[in-house]
Image (cartoon, rainbow, N blue to C red; front, side, top):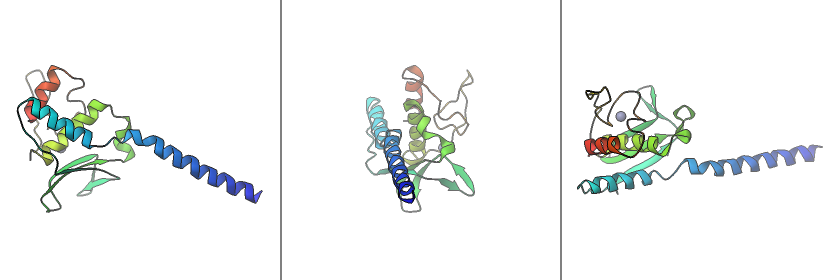
Length: 158
Ligand SMILES: [Zn+2]
């Protein structure tokens, strides 16, 4: 029996190992969104080079005792490096975000890290936020699909 239970433990570890691998599609290379940011800028006549912008998943982002799901550093740790981080913390729920939500998120952080922008809480006349750089709670759904709205917000951030 003892041998059997040990076999079960080994089997469990093996299954967990497999599940972890299966999860990896939920963590696409963040570079996908950096490349997309360059492409969208190029379509609008800007020549952005994000080669030197670092992008990484981290387990937690804590600043002054507060927890964040993403952060854009225009001067990471005083090193002069530009870097964005996306938190893998469960409450941030990155795995269940859609591609568009992830794009909203990464483009917002690139606004901080690459374009040196702060938050912008202006509103448009129709009550929607004026910028992807909103500091409000709906930063993941500033736009939800390709089209006019997305074009407006990407032009605004460029
Ligand atoms: Zn922000």
